[in-house]
Image (cartoon, rainbow, N blue to C red):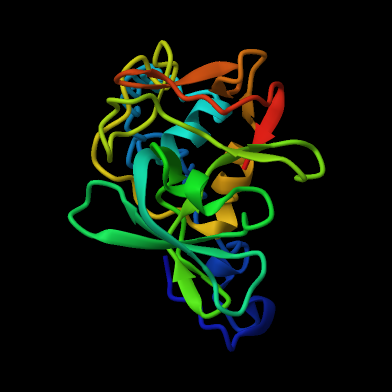
Length: 234
């Protein structure tokens, strides 16, 4: 085909043999859909997730609280009235640690000096030390008390119980085993373990100490007070 210049409008000046030639448009090439454009790899099916192992059942809250609180058999080896308080006793107490702890108790009006030093007592042993008057108190001597605290009686482990042994719950409801002999870590006040524990400590109808209805026990038997029944312990 003769070369057609674009400058020739509508074929003007072209040879007769070429005037009837129509500009040919390039043939349209059928475009095939890119079916095979990087065929998507079929994702391998994800392996079935393993069933989550059931977590070990956690202790009921009440038992968990007691397991975190460390109550010990103790012996008050010295007790005196605080020089600047008509309520506070200052005690030196043996918990079998190889040293004596200083503990303050507001019991002057309820318990005599002689009663404080007789026999054994039960101490809340893993409280954070706190200041009472001018001393740092390292625990709490536990007593049964009536509602207005006008009557207080020291909780007494039986004779023969070992100074320093940890108080257990009858039947070991805290996980089915005795609580560890090692001293529990000091309680964080923000978690309110002390308050939650004291809320469930009581003496029963036989004057025996109990927690959440279960008796407090030592290696020689239950812990008792002198006469109060169905009252709280604090």
